[in-house]
Length: 149
Image (cartoon, rainbow, N blue to C red):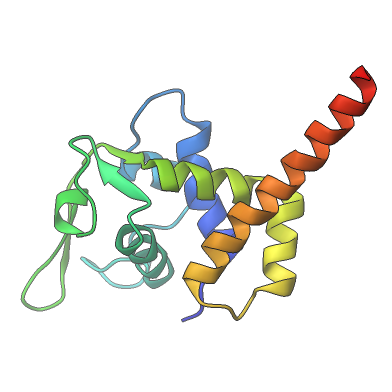
């Protein structure tokens, strides 16, 4: 499966749009993102699982104790036969997660990433998103400074 930046953006937007410091799997599901498989009981939606794992392994989300890097502390446990147990765990964006979410929330940055870096490794996409966002805001700052001069 390939990384879908639009899909990642939807997941991250749940965190950005929340009025609370933490969200949980019910908030994500409630936003219209399929979390559990619609065809198999005790299975996760494969697209969600894939992208959630990308967020976890890149340490973009954590639990309220700042634990990241593993699915179990973030509420996902796999059984012996592949069944999934979802626990409602309070989740938050890490600082890197906020940075990436902010970049994907910027339509110009997201479009550039999708068109120019669509086949790049995730690390390149992440770093590119930060550089593009910095460039975007540098242009805004330059414009503001010119107005004030």
